[in-house]
Length: 497
Ligand code: ATP
Image (tube, rainbow, N blue to C red):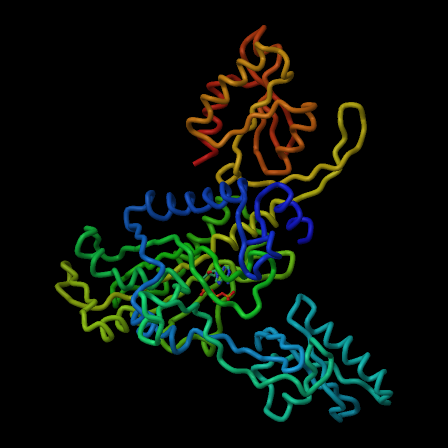
């Protein structure tokens, strides 16, 4: 992970927000290459989800909406995470990420240990329990730890659980609900009546505008409304780089279906679609898995939620949630606004509030996934037999920030440069390309490998003296072959879509 973060900074993918002021926890900036990569992810999703489907339309709603939207949706009352304070260190923890266990020796509880969630939560608790037993010089056999998170702590246990910050018990508070919506005030008055929220998800825009889209969009059930946009959550513990931040971007789609439609099949179809889409932008199947939320943990209106999980370097984590939400959201807004949200089905002549399947994914989490899956350091042997390290980002041509680098073999040969410039200008009209004439050709290839450019074309003497072909060098195999301009455009047309 450290190498990926370093590369992201070094090559201008991702910077800390407000870095010159020491950064701002939970906020990030995307640099020249990062903003291209992000735009490509968004564009691929929009093209595949909206433009290339006949049953999904796009939408762009405002970030700040009427505060009643968030009352009706349940966010004002319930969009909370459980928070635990350490009264001594003033640190705050998400209760469900703070784990503890009793230290049990010969059937007796002799104390407690705690750790923050990680890939090794249980092992770390066990190590701490052993060390606790040693320090307290307790004799007897230590029982294996049982990891629980702070939401499961009994009232009498809380004061005995050590704070991860101080290592001492007595300073942790019982968990309390912390609302993650960012508040702001709208208008010149700053009082309770002017409070509004930055949206914590884009989805409510689709529900609130449902009628507008039905009345104007020439849509018929089943159909979807999709949106890409920023969302904001005042996460208690933003962490793992851009995985969990306070300002992020979502790509969400609400797929409306008839009340008697086979929701389970539709749900499965969307899970398959989302997984295929992730493969299409280059994520390896070996890193993807599915997690079905257990029934007892679902909201009362939810029929089922399946997350597509990704194997990040810091663990297997949620990438994309696909939820079957019944008709809860539309019904809530119909009740709160007094405006009916029913749909009239011409075929059956029935009126009903449609049900919905919601695939919701974060652009930043996808971007981090493609960086993690694509990053590699390898030993390569050059023509002279020297072994050197190359860092390569294996990004799919669909999303790579630069599709082709155009390299004149020598920068002081006018004919080479003129031909390279001409090709660069032509390519630029359709693709993100890069012109580089600085340094040895091998070094130029390495620079492109590191930012994930799938191809380099070199204009050499054969190009201008013989048949006009260039050398095409492929990033992953590092193989080279001669290619004509027409073949180059055909390759790009096929691979970049
Ligand atoms: P988590 O359990 O990780 O907090 P969630 O289940 O609350 O996520 P949803 O509300 O389902 O997430 O949001 C849909 C998607 O938005 C997530 O699958 C994720 O890709 C993205 N997302 C949610 N919160 C964040 C965040 N703080 N930073 C970056 N992306 C996020």
